[in-house]
Image (cartoon, helix red, strand yellow):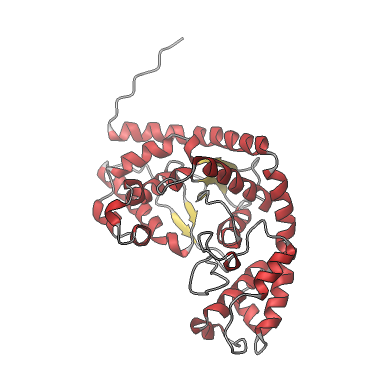
Length: 338
């Protein structure tokens, strides 16, 4: 079987630099080497309450951002998860394969549910089973993951192995993680120890994909720093989260390494890094932002891309589901002839 990538991103709205560097930019790089399915995971999104109109808008925003960044919807598949019913169907089967203890150890559930765990949705608890179904419905062999998704991919691997072992089959490949590039985890501009997030009350904490050049420059100029000169070795960044974050963003946007960025600014003040980072960020993001805005103004085109992607994804998914039904023992009536 050819190597196939499945990767998804939630339709969170208000896309920011972390979404671009952590996921979408890497997807563009993968296109030449893999068969790719890129999914807007709207089923995952509703594990917590979503305003329906906002969910539809956010789904289009993420699809537009993928295309604007360079994902080719002709060569690869862009779709939203809810248009392919096999995701939910296989997730239910995996609900019966996975074990409560496995899910109970998922750190993301603990973080998102917080102290009011009894009030969390069942969907939030079973979220990793749906993620496993997303990947394995297409027999995905590789999954680009950030640090916060490694544990969920491990569970997907466990589910694939248990299904195969339980039913004495080789139905599912065991998917491999792809950890890609610099700045896979982009942190807040106001707190280098917290992830960049749309939910942060301060807009200064993030660079939004809709920010203009002046706003990007202002946010970088106001980004939190420490009082020391920039270090001359990567090891020193462990105790300096703001320096690590800004240097990491610079390295990612300039297509360099963190080591090279550290050497470029060693012994200099943060102001020198901020000035150069502002220039690089504006140059890299401006053309993407222009195309992003153009696409968002043409909802019909975005909807057509998603519908076409869903049809093509279903063609891959349906024979996998038939195979799973046969393995599990579901009775499927034979199609009438003629």
